Length: 258
Image (tube, rainbow, N blue to C red; front, side):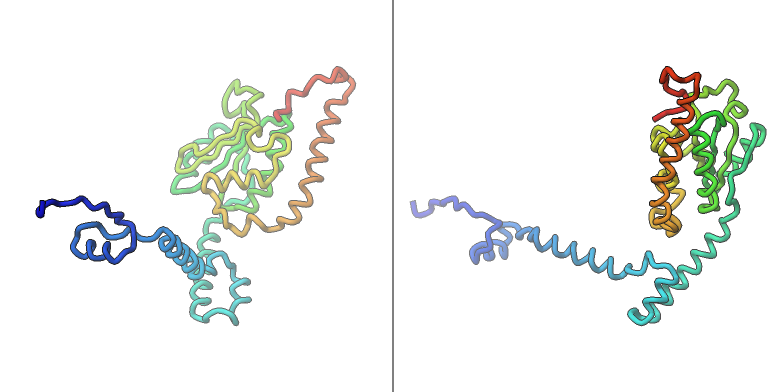
């Protein structure tokens, strides 16, 4: 009986002197790190990262305004980086308008033009279609704002014989000679209420524009104020089309794809 051994239940997670002795002899494993300590460490890393990169989204004017608050060398480093980015972007701003093309030009002007990481957007249009006219009008300021992206328009029937009118407008985005995204009508973008912001979000989604690009918020307030008026104008046009004498039976117009 003197040599009898008794099983002793030990909770290895407890912080006791006895457990410290057992850990020292390798009998029980080391205590796992405290979850709260890990969370605090992760939070400190996030805060440090945000502090180290606090000037990442600042433009040159904003950097100038911070000269009295930040280290001079630190500010100058970001200024030089911004200048390099501006010069690099300026090299890419080679378009700036919507280019009309025909079927024979499609391969060179669209597919091949999207090589080497470039983006090309093509609108297969139908002028009798309200949404196609809306898309055409939205692409003009979009092309001016993002002049590094080539934007083209071609009548759908000239591009693809017997292309269904019901598929117009069709918006196709090419990248590296492949189709990155396509939309059949504007149903997925906002229908008759589609705005330039909707198209800008598409550019962000496919990677053509960074989500922190300063051009996305230029005249943002003006655009916000004009959205309501634009919608009223579009729906006023819709009403005028439906209210013509031959349309008194209130049948829906085929041009609308809400």
